[in-house]
Length: 480
Ligand code: LFR
Image: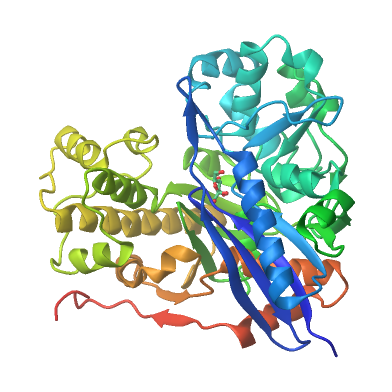
């Protein structure tokens, strides 16, 4: 039959990609059409996403793909979680969406928690309370801005917002909404309890759709602007982590965990239902929705973000070091002088990471890293150490033994991180696919279009992409 061509717009917190999927009924090929930076902007001390620029880059991607490959069947956008924008009654975007690393939530934390204590948030929603969550952001917005009640007609999570800009249709897709802290873990619907406790009008949430729904087609004005034909707009598993996990061609229900490695490291496993217990709460786990509605028990670990910040710091000082060079440096020594907790608040907002790491080491009585190699090595070993810790906790919470770790996402190009993960956790690591978010996005589109079953989709992924296995080794990887 004919090859099906479709586009995955996979947006991460530091860069975005437009990927073309080519499916011939047997294997899937992907091709990067366009890659662009996603650089947030400070305005008056607040941090925002440059949403129009992102939309512009995605349109550029559509145009390029169309020129090179002709008719495209569909597109779907997936993004990081928790962030959102508002549209007014006329359907106009009210202002640029805030970045979850903006600081406006801090002063409203206690106010919110007086109305809805953290433990109760967790027991209703299954979501671990965190200042970045939609619920904290939204509460702060309504507190800070009196006019919002009148002018905000509809809230759109980031992927929903882009789908709206492409199709004119406002929808609330379930996987992205599952990151909000505003959904009921049992019903999988918006929690009217949470909204009413916080005096936020629940009517701002648009029609709910499940992951894998064709919601419309791109607007005629956009077709005209780009000189492209019509294509369907699909709400896939529009949360990047849900897409990434959907691409893993193995069962995550038995003895396996996953780590999705990007700006964040998401460490977790798939369970039939949300795991809402004393322990899962205390250990800091959260529950989000998977494609197909099963549950993802996981922990957010501040991941390669620390390395990305370090890279930005050094580049600003005129000393750019690539990610590859960072790994080479880390391999020149064979042991980190200290271990940090990547989730310590020190590392959560933009800043000079070398200083923050030294500060952390002083506070904890450890020898501070001095050279570049030492600093990078501290970050990588600390990540692997926090993976080990999290996986051990997960075994305790679920009573399941985890023998295999599936690592996916751009971060697995850092082979040292994969090997350190195998060594430090003492478990076998299977790494792949790298473009997990985009691949998950594409197979879900194919399923929504009726072109394959999702179980078949997993086989397609297995046939089509490379995987690499790392066995735990006691030999230091860096000893040459
Ligand atoms: C990963 C991710 C995480 C989410 C974090 C912030 O890219 O989507 O799942 O918790 O970004 O939105």
